[in-house]
Image 1 (cartoon, rainbow, N blue to C red):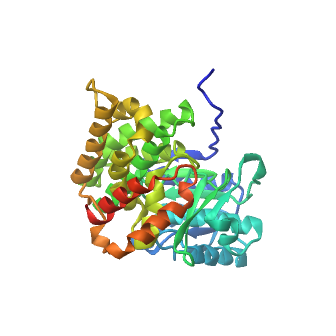
Image 2: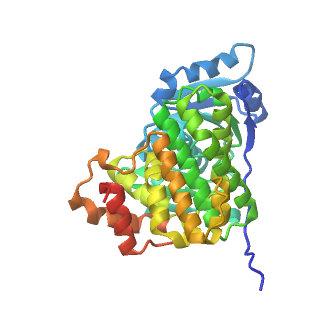
Length: 396
């Protein structure tokens, strides 16, 4: 019997990458044949002068029109702001969307595209029960030209067919999977990430590392995904500490942007993703940035659930530069130790004590993890979930 199962490799975003790649933005916008564009971003990006840098590219004669800059996006792509941005775009008859920012901005833009294309006014309608799955042939192309410029190297949302929104009513993360919500063109320009603070650089890099590890560990995806995930691990392991120590190192920044993009392409939208399962639940509960949630949970979850990682541990360990001849169990522990060392080297915490969790909230945390849509494929055994949460929340 063959061991290879069916898999589908389906990524359609054109990636334009390199220092100064933003210079091609006007040409890319014309390539997509839209004239009326809205920029979706956040106040931090505006205050950092990044939008001004992009607007300078339109100094010469052109027939492109930036009709509005929606700069109200907050952490976690809140549903209410997705709806507000879409209403603005609809009112101004925008034809194209330019997303500039981190994962929350890029996911907000995906939600806006879905609403403008579908005629819906509430993004919650696309994710009933906080989970929306549009599989391949069932999905329609939204038909809204869409460019994404990431300013962090973490989510890879610019090429991802997944969007995550914060449902403010239910206080949970909602997941939308759709093969056409990713950007038509992604511009990876490391010069736009050099001002990212060290802590954010660190935990967004660990976010990408989590995507890659959970992607490689999911054994049903196929070698195309593994190739991307393993190379992403190598790039992050070799460049993250450098970028944290020296944010102006453009080569390290470029490698991390590339790794982030590759890592999300290796990530299973539906698979055994227990780190994300816990991160979504705790992030929504305690307002923890998603990348930081993944960073803290990654070694804790790997240590608690070795059976998920052991089948691929030899290639995972090798990607981390672990060359020792050892048993699978020993390689697994060495890999976990490498990740913990990376957290320490980049100044990230080992738990969530700074967010003030209380012992009486443990039961709610357990319920939130068990009911989170990211746990559809693999339910974490209760006794090990309690162990994970005790260590993550209270350092015990």
